[in-house]
Image 1 (cartoon, one colour):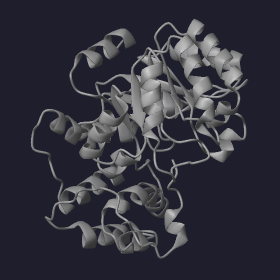
Image 2 (tube, helix red, strand yellow; image 1 turned 90 degrees about the vertical axis):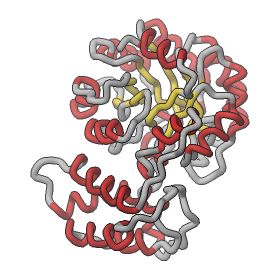
Image 3 (cartoon, helix red, strand yellow; image 1 turned 60 degrees about the vertical axis):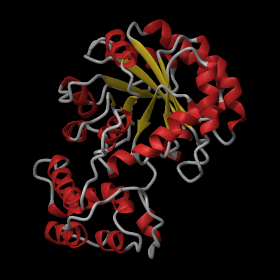
Image 4 (cartoon, one colour; image 1 turned 60 degrees about the horizontal axis):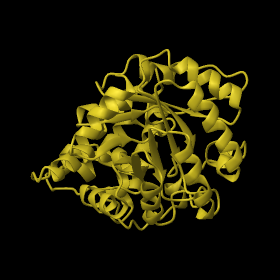
Length: 349
């Protein structure tokens, strides 16, 4: 769907615009398809295409675009710092059925920011300015940016906002933390509100939206036109549906333990590659369960046991022990008493 049509239709609706955050090695084609079964967002962002002098469009990520099963607009995200390469890649991406090209200015992974890409670019506002100018000239469809507040301090945000405003962005997503803060600190929603007031394009608020109630608190606090949700949607695939229900003053669907168990089963099958070894698939599922488990129970025992599962039978035996019940589950993050430091491994997407 062309960006003009897609975004115009979304903005004409009274509901907040909802987007699934791009999460590397998570928001792939199978995950998109699974999210769409649960109501899903209005916009799907791809994992980022790595862009450099000799880069090509990664085929697995490209397949999310060419085989998009959701019926909703796809935004293709790029990460990199070389202007000619970014321009070349943006032009290539526009040959595919996407509604917009997005530039990643927020990835906090050290392997990324040490190469002055993602959140690392926020240390060089002048380079950001040059990149945005070149990309705006090269992109004839929607051009969007996902950013954090700065690298190690939000003070640079005052310098970044006029840059974002100057380049006619079609949409700006602001994660309300610095790169240095990763996912540990409270989200600074006041800075997102500052962006809403400063830029002429719609703004999506991003960061720690874990329930429909929290979603509307964030919208009220920021004035944002919508929300981008990542980890909360992994834990609670009904979250986008619940936000829409709350907006329409409808009773919220409350999943039970057995509903979450069915979701885990569907997730296991959806993200299972052909001919994958059983142990490898169980290990892969632990990446998702690191997030899901935070909403299961407060002792940490669920995650403690899941982290030690090695077979499919063992994995689902643990899931059934904790989830095979009809009790409602809010699926909000609980203050879990972790017994093992490694349970926290893999938390930062």
